Every structure is written in structure tokens, then in C-alpha cells.
Picture (cartoon, rainbow, N blue to C red):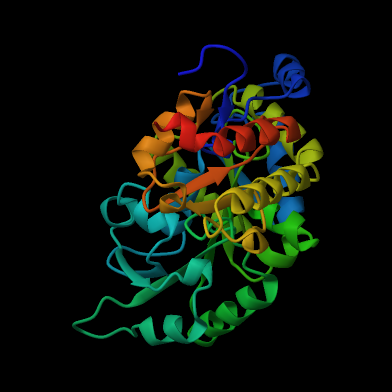
Length: 349
């Protein structure tokens, strides 16, 4: 790996580090035992999260994965089916919590880059019967990780919600990057979240906080979730130290996500010029996109190793590789990445 210069990490927006303002807020945070008495800084964060998402209440949790699992637990009973996309993060990358912890059955439908088809969802719904596991919940994702950061607009969420309402089912949103969706669409997050019963979003991705996520829903949802969070070992003590960074993230980090989106589009455009067919710059909506590795004449691991030798970190995907921009990647860094890609033929020899 290159030993000089700054490392440019395009693996994920989870690598973002807290801003100086966050660090100062963490140092000065007013705290108490959140499990016993309620932590005042955690309470402020939860109120702000509920306000931003248009929900009645919110709960500070350790991670987006914990938020998603709690979203399942508060909306289902053991033995029910959960309808979700076959490439969704909840299905692929959350260690089978749907089955092992929530004791539910995953019923997958085609992901379509995150655009779950309402008619396919409706066809998957199973009514209560003696032999059947009845459907208990419909899960959606926005933005869509495996879809390359695709934004599912509010009107499409409304169509899914209409199907769910007709059948008396709740809808849960894995909104890990919902504020990326909102910024890209030029609409408030509440325009999306009004079509779902509950959601979680991450503080520790593009918003740059070092820890945590928020589960948002009705007051009844959150009261149930508090008990489940405790069961999972997620009850926290002086958590205001971590919540303070989350408050700063929600106050200062949302609008600047547009910079990450612009850098992603610029990177995609430059790569498409260097290797036509490697990606579609017009399809880049947020801070994630995929490139087709074969367009660069090597396999995914070779490409990752070659880039690492130049101080650029990527995941070794094949046949496609995900790239992610974030606050730690500047416009100047994009120039450097493109310069390295331009030299790939020589570097690979």
C-alpha cells in the first residue's frame, strides 16, 4: 500500500469521523443514566429525530442493524412472514436476525434496484390460515444499498403503503440513508416517512457521527422497543456523550450531503470517460454507485489490490464494485482517484 499521502477510503460512508464540533459537544454533554432516569442529551436527540422524520417518538440505538431488528420485533409476532426485497440489507447483511431473533420467516420479492413492485408485494401477501405463516410486515429500503444508492420517491412508497393498508399490514422502512434520499429529491425526510409506520436511520454514515441510529415511530412503538432494546443488551448509561454528536449531525450534516452526491456523480462521469460502459453516470443519485469491474480489464480483487497500492481503499466486489463518497472524500480526492484509474493499465503490468 502507498505510504505517502492521504488514504482515500471509498469503501463506505461508515468510515466518516466526527467533526470538531461533534467532539466539543461530546466533551461538554450533559449526561445521566439513560436506563434509570433518562439522559437529557439523549432525550434531545430523540426529540430532534422524531421532528425530522415526522414521527411521534424516537429511540437512540446502537446501530442501524439494531434499529432494523427492533423494527421487526415491534411490528410482528413470532411465526409471521416478513415481505422484503431479495437484495435488501435486512435480508442479506443482518446475520439472519429476522429468523433467529424475531422468529419470523423472510418472504423475498424481486428487488428491482430497490423499487419493490406493489403488485409483486400484493401477490406475496399470505392471509392467516391453519397451515400458513401469515404476513405480518412489509419492509422497504431507501436509499437502496444494493441498488447503488437509488432513491425510492415518496409517490412509490405511497403505492406500497396503499397495498399494505388494504391488507391491514404495517410498513417498516430501513432508512439508513434516508437523508441522502431527501436531499437528492429536494424534499424533507417526512415526505418519505409519512408512508411508513416506523423506520430507523443511521447517524454514523454520511451524517458523520461516530455512533448510533434512531428508531422512529409511534409512542406505542417506542415504548415496546425500549423493552426489546434492553433484551438485546442495548440499554445505555451516560449515552449523552454519544447522542451529543448525533444532535450536531442532524443540525449541520444533512444539507452538506449534496456535496457527497456531487462528488459521486463527478467520479462516475470521469470513470465512464476512462472506461466506457463501466457505469452509468446518469443513474447516480446519491453517494453510492456501482462499477463493472471487467471494464477495467481485471478482476475485483486485482483492482482492489492495485488501488490499495496507490492509497485508495475499495471493497473487492466482482462483477460489480460499490464506491461510496462521504465527508472524508474531497473534490481534490476525486481528481486523485481519477488520475490513478487513468494509470491502471500501467499499474497492472
